[in-house]
Amino acid sequence: MLQKSILVILLLFSYSMIIADLKDFGFKPMHQKIRYKEDFFRLYNQWLYADLDSVSRNIYFLELAYVVPFDHPIKALTPITNEQQYERYKNLLMMHICRLLTQEYINYGYMYMKENIYFYNEEFIKEYLDGYEIAEYYFNHARSYWEQAIKYAEDADTLWEHKIDLLFLEDELYKIKMGDLDYYKVVSNLMERIQKNRKRIESLSSSLK
Image (cartoon, rainbow, N blue to C red):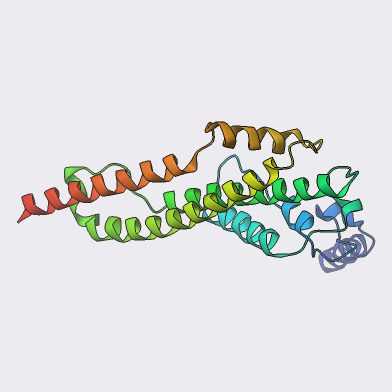
């Protein structure tokens, strides 16, 4: 009798799986291929608690957004009325993508960077030094993308008469122009802190000899 009851339950469960709706599984199917800059840009996410996986995911999609072509102007992220406005839009979006890549590479590198060195950390010295090399690699990547972000910002600014309706991009351009958004300072500060920590580790190593 028990075996029959179990069989009935399994059959009912199997039937419910067969007739289940896609919404029951918490995802939506993609009806078309993702191939354009705007598509990959939309996949970028800001995480409340970022980890290596979430930052890696953002970098992956942003790098793809960086290299793939723009979609047709009619499918831009904002209404476009003329060619000059479209050029400004493209420069602003590339500026923003490069800015996000700058931030994400900083986030990624920072995860390998040990901030505070204490006298009882001697057993982890090698791991800390290896982490600093990795962090510097990604911070340099961030600096490279920031250089490109500035270039796109300057190109967009030459078309100042053709502003677009994406205010967050226009606001970001203004902050870059005014120097309120400056990742050179951020990266330089991080590099300086790494050098200070290296000296701290050297001092710690000397005291242990």
